[in-house]
Length: 149
Image (cartoon, rainbow, N blue to C red; front, side, top):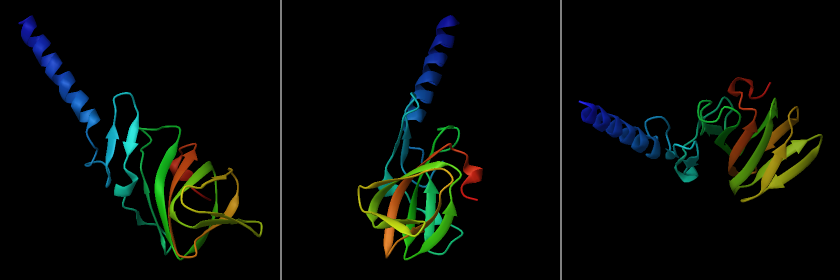
C-alpha cells in the first residue's frame, strides 16, 4: 500500500513539475514559460497587444500579480500617436522597435531600438511616436489598478 502511495506522489510531483515548465498558452495570448523557481521567460515576439482606451495605443501585460507581486511588466505599441499620462509608479521602458519619444516640461527625450528610458513616479508626460513604436515596460510597484491618474 505504501508503495502505491509513493508512486502516486511521484507521478503527481512530475505532472506538476512539467506543467510549470511548459508555456502558459492557456493563460496568456503569448508564449510564456514559468520555471518552478519563479523565473519567467516571455518570448516578446509572440506578444500580441490589445487595444487600449486611446486610439493608436495597444498593450499587453505579460505578468500577473501572482507571478510577480512587486513588479509589473508588459509590451506597448504606439502607432502615430501621442497621449498624456501621469505615472503613479516608477517605470522603465525598453524600445524594441521604432522611435519612442517622451515629452516632459517642453523637453523631449527620444529612444530607439535597444534604448532604455526611466520615468520616475509622479511624472506628468506625453508618450509620442512619429510613426510606430513597440517597447517593453517594467513598473514598480505592480499595482495594476493605479496605472496613471
